[in-house]
Length: 170
Image (tube, rainbow, N blue to C red):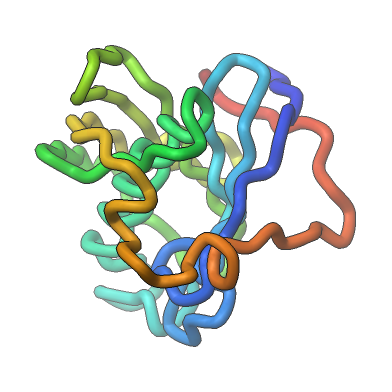
């Protein structure tokens, strides 16, 4: 199914998942879609390997965790999700060196806690892993403290050719 992009989210400086200056990171770009899901686009490389030609399960977990946790930003940009509980199902090996998509959405949103679900799929839209999680809402200002993180390290990164839509399995 085709989903239109409504907004691109910021990237950070050094985050493992979305940091643009983290040499070991995934450099994931996140997009908000018209159906209130969030989509992360990334490509793993050899430094993200576990068994030959397969992505490490911890990296898959980090990616799905961040994707679902970021979904709250679609509702309130001053809040981040802090992981309380996470459940991952690894369905198939995740390949390296191909564009992969992580999709997440909120399934329950209460005053201090939200829950979400997500999945990881390959270029053929085959679902490789699924995830459910519970997150505590925390103010971005409280998380970053007195640091000038928002002004200096939470950056909007232009795409060479901004995507207008994405084809997703569900």
